Image 1 (cartoon, rainbow, N blue to C red):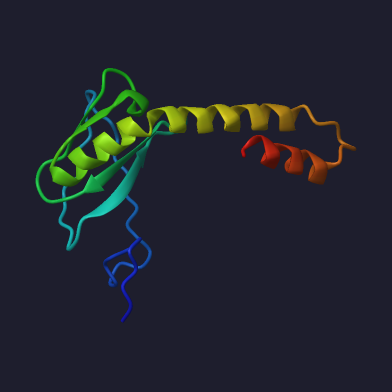
Image 2: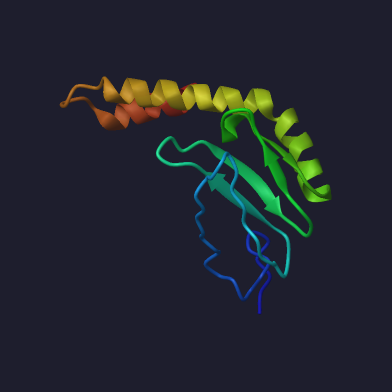
Length: 127
């Protein structure tokens, strides 16, 4: 048996998907995990996203309006992860800005455009 750092539980190869409806501004998940792991919560249809470590104890995700502005209040893994996310904030925002520019430029491409040259030019911008 091999250890996979991205999925430390060898009995859970595919991960777990679940959903919950928001009622009165709240949603609740209950369960147990053998080992802590990172999860992703997102809303539909707008796909606001937040990553959270599923770890023992209560995990609260508080937001005035969306997952984009949410704060995770939980155990030590999430406290450390929150610090990392804060430190990476400028890099994350720059990446998001580049993705927006890329997708907007790609939408404007004429049908007969050289897509390979377009992709190569965008790779150079990312360096």
